[in-house]
Structures are given as C-alpha cells and as structure tokens.
Amino acid sequence: MILQSLHLTNFKNISECSLEFSPKINCFLGDNGVGKSNLLDAIHFLSFCKSFAGLTDPMLIKRGEDFAIARGHYLRRDIDEEIVAGLAVGRRKSFKRSGKEYRRLSEHIGLFPLVMIAPADIELINGGGEVRRRFLDMVISQGDARYLEALIRYNQALTQRNSMLRDGVADDNLFLAVEMQMDMAADYIHRVRAARIDRLSEIFGRYYSAISGTRETPKLTYRSHLSDSDSLAVLLETNRGRDRLLRHTSVGVHRDDIEMTLDDMPARQTASQGQAKTYTIALRFAQYEFLRDVTAMSPLLLLDDIFDKLDAGRVERIMRIVATDTFGQIFVTDTNRRHLDEIIALTGGSDAIWSVVDGCFTPITRPDTQS
Ligand SMILES: Nc1ncnc2c1ncn2[C@@H]1O[C@H](COP(=O)(O)OP(=O)(O)O)[C@@H](O)[C@H]1O
Ligand SMILES: [Mg+2]
Figure 1 (cartoon, protein in one colour):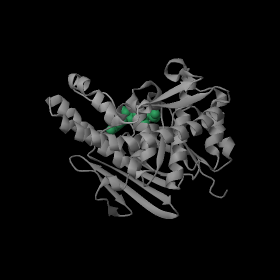
Figure 2: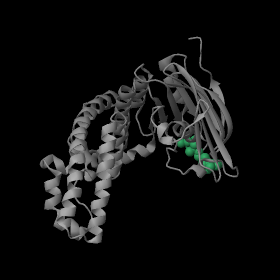
Figure 3: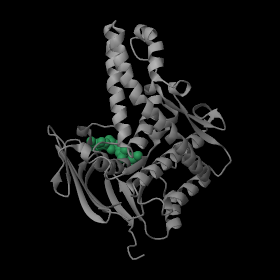
Figure 4: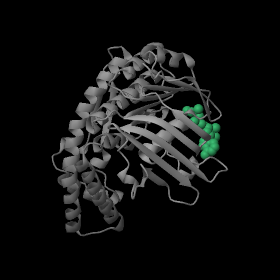
C-alpha cells in the first residue's frame, strides 16, 4: 500500500500543506518542535482514527481554529482510494472512504495498515505488563478475529467477577458460572499467545541480530498463570477466598506478561539505551512482518526520531533493512541531515526529503519518478 499524497489543513501546528510522496522513502528534516511528528501523527490518524500520541481529537485542531482536515490519497491493492478525515469543534469526527462516510469508525481501522516506531516505544521494555499485553493483543488480533472475540468475552466475565467480589456476593454457584466463562475464553487466549510469542521471538531475534551486528541473545518468554496449571477454573476457585479479601481477580490471563531478556538478563535492568532501542525497533519490525503476512499488503512504516542514541553501525544496518523490498513505503523524521543522506545513498534516487520549519514543509529532494 502506498500513500501517494497528503493534504492537511489546521492539523496541530500545520496550517496548510500538500505533499506528494515517494513510493519508497520519505524523509522529514528539521529542528525540535517544528511539526515532523505532527505530520506522522496525521498519517497515523488516517489509518487508526486516532492520534499516535494519545491526544484527544480537539487537541489535533490547530490552536485558535475550529476545524481540521486530513486528506490522503492511497494506492491500495492497485486501487486509488481517498480517505478524508474531518474534525470540528463540538462535532463528531467524520471519516470518508472515497466519498462515502463510514457508519462506524471500527469499519475503517485496520484497512490501511501502518506500523509506527517512536521514542515512546521504550515503554515496551520499561512500562508495566499492560503495555506489553496491548502490543501482543494488537499483533495477534490483527489477523485473528476469534482471538479478539475471546478477549472481549474474557474481559466481560472478568469485569463481572470483579464487581461480584467488590459487592461481597456470597453465592459460590454464581462465581462458578462466571469462572467457567473466563476459563473457556482464557484457554484459547493462552494457546494463541503461547504460539505467537514463540514465533514473534524468533522473528524479533532475527531483526535484533541484524541491527546490532553482535552475538547478544535477546529472548521473549511468555509468562502466564496458566503456564503452570491447565485450568483457569481451578485456579480461580482456589484463589476465590483471597480474591474476596483483595476485592479483585488476582489470577488469569489479564495478568499475562512477556519477559524480555538480553543474554538471559532482564532487558529493563541491563540493556544500554542503544540496546533497549534496538530491542524495541526489532519488536516493531517483527510486528510489521506479522501485519504484512495477515493483510497481504506492505503496511506504511513510520520511523519517528529513531536514530538518536544509536551508533553509526546500527543506524546504517536499520536503513539497509528498511530499504529492502520487504518493507514498503517509509516515512522518516530526523534532526540530523547526515542520517537522511545515508539513507538516500542506500536507495539511490527514488526518495524525497523535506525541510520542516514552523509547520511548513519545503522539498529539498523530490522523488525521481523516472527511476
Ligand atoms: N493543536 C495544536 N495547535 C498548534 N500547535 C500545536 C498543536 N499541537 C501541537 N502543536 C505544536 O507542535 C509542536 C510540536 O511538533 P512536533 O511535530 O512534535 O515536533 P517535532 O518536529 O520535534 O517532531 C509544538 O511546538 C506544539 O506546540
Ligand atoms: Mg518529533
């Protein structure tokens, strides 16, 4: 899939811009705070109907204005498509695909696949288990509707059990019924997670080595209460007394985690900044590969300021990896011209670079459409 052009009006600090993209690498160069990440956020918004930075819709409208529009032209499965997103103060946001308004935004999410790599990804290593579960659930549910259904059923039953614990419900039969529902959903969730984490670890490990150029061994290991017990129903029953005191459910797949190690030590504690960054980039590349396989399209790849804290060798290896045909169209931001020139040198001509100042985008190099 290719984003051919983008037109923005009043999107964050960008008053007006119209950009024609290269089908391969697009670079945005500029100082801090000029609008590079804002542009990537607009592209993210067109795919996911929400900001990457977790901002609410009104915060996406340029200060002092009362509406914003993002319009993208895509080439998707060889068909030209236009996505237009509109935001207005006090109105529901609107999304149109080739002129037709979506009834529900959920119909759009996932159709225009995209992976973004950004500094906040460090939370995958340093953050709590919920960050890693969200990552895992996203990677899996993109290609497995049954998984998403199981998650929804599990969470509904969990919410019910938690409110029974809070309300002091005494009837064990009521608990048994809810725990049975959790057990059935958890069984599928656990099996799929176990299989996917193994596969993810393998692909991720391959990317990690390719980027680091070292023999460090990274590993992802699934941690789940269900790994040492074959039935969640039994676990829940055993822990019911304790959960009544705690007033919440202390065991189950909602507490699953992915242990991330480097040479058998926890990455959170022992990885250097550059190693941690390599780790998260390799995780995202693995996500990209999963997503490409399930959608049978090349997702857009957005690289926001990823080169900071990486040595020159790692930067070059990353660029060599993304410049291959395995990855499709790429959007890169940086404050350093040197990195971007290296990228261009690797791909030879089919790239575009913009200089960004105060929300304005000026082309430095245009895509060489002849080549
Ligand atoms: N709704 C908005 N209206 C106007 N300016 C905004 C809005 N949201 C963010 N900005 C501005 O955008 C700038 C940050 O842009 P960003 O794209 O993150 O910079 P960078 O080029 O470093 O990636 C900040 O100066 C911020 O004040
Ligand atoms: Mg930025």
